[in-house]
Length: 166
Image (cartoon, rainbow, N blue to C red; front, top):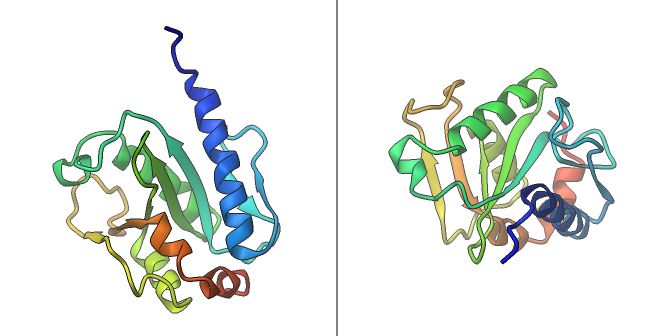
């Protein structure tokens, strides 16, 4: 049996998220060229500058939802990295994680969470987890975790985020 090419799998997931976010916000999104290299755009980004997040996409089997409670696993490393990138360009982190046969999970900072709340999102969540202990978060920003499907279920929020001004 042939092994899975992790880079190709990650790239497919990024392309999938470009389509999802393009549909949701009604504006074109793009995959960052050289994604994975040092950059401040993240893996995917919209065609307008006012979007308040740097988006990182991870589709891998190396993380588990339970790592959030155990302070281990790669999630905290990923979140710290995207938080650092976001801070360097005065934006908020948005980490999108996927495991095979599991729902897509989104993680952001407390400020990022407030942005979504102000846009009218996250008001009917099935899952909304707040991690505020210091754990392995480098910047003590808190980590708010929710499902992508809950975010996308609120149709007007994508348009509101297009016009977001800090």
